[in-house]
Amino acid sequence: MRFLPSDEQSDFARTLRSLLGSAQVPAAVRAWADGDHGPGHELRSRLAATGLFALAAPEAYEGAGLLPLELSLGFVELGRAGMPGPVVESAAVSVLLSELGDEALAKRFLPGLVAGEAWATLTLPGGSPYALDADAAAHCLTVSAAGELRLAAPGTGEVLRSTDPARRLSRPSAAGGELLAAGPAVARAAAAAGRWARLLTAAQCLGVGEALLARTVGYVKQRTQFGAPIGSFQAVKHRLADTLLALEFARPLLWAAALSTAPGDVAAAKLRCGEAAYRAAMTALQLHGAVGYTEELDLSLWLRKARPLRDAWGTPSACRAEVLRSVTPG
Image 1 (cartoon, rainbow, N blue to C red):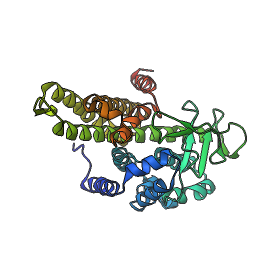
Image 2 (cartoon, rainbow, N blue to C red; image 1 turned 90 degrees about the horizontal axis):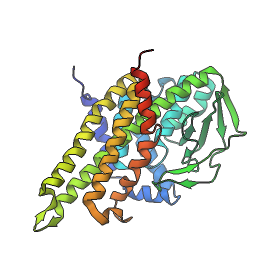
Image 3 (cartoon, helix red, strand yellow; image 1 turned 60 degrees about the horizontal axis):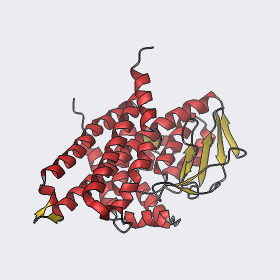
Image 4 (cartoon, rainbow, N blue to C red; image 1 turned 180 degrees about the vertical axis):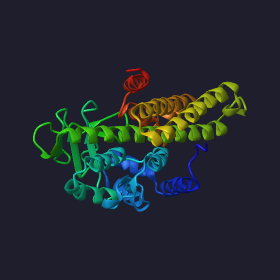
């Protein structure tokens, strides 16, 4: 069994990496944290031109079909670049509307999401009560525990800051809002959207971890102590090797989860990718020393993402519980 991305999938990932590498993403992240969404919206449009957002929508609504593996490959690159904005949530909304089977709602929202004309954000029962970047989203959707899908007014609620200044959180209004749909179909669609959100967050975590490791390796080759690069010290090599192994062991779990989208597989991937990214952040901070804390160093943009992404769409404890449910008989 050849458990590797195909040539076409690898080419797609390289295209995204090249696009993001030339797009001055760190400047867009800093602008986003300050409330300036313009550079982030421009990035969204450029990504849409590659067909990235079409991978979470059916062909009937200008999408390419629901393709979790290809989308996961793309989201690894978004994490590697540190892309701001509710990219996971927008994809999850596309999945929710696709799975819901309501043609009128799909026609209303999906073409704009696929074309990169708008962001969407989403809150689901049992998850975080906070909507990500609702002040920048054109569509703020919520699903209640009673199985009601509502559209809240965009930008509602006080904006709160998380550990990552580019993750702007707000609590959407629980009352009011346009009722879009209700019933068991909403609950089933919300469950599918939640699994995709967890999977794509895992992919982002893997990309963040790889970016942190690459920057740290580059730094320890340049910084010298006692007349030698610190990267030549055995203790430093061991720390970097442990970080690399954590990322490499997480990668096949992500691909397996993308192929199956089973709840237990997705939870296992999220757990391992999230922990690997957090380990990479701790390694980067330790080996960079005090300079790692500075706002001026781009490294801080990735350092601040590792912990929130590890906990987003499924904390480690929640993912462990899901894995246990999937392997426990009965």
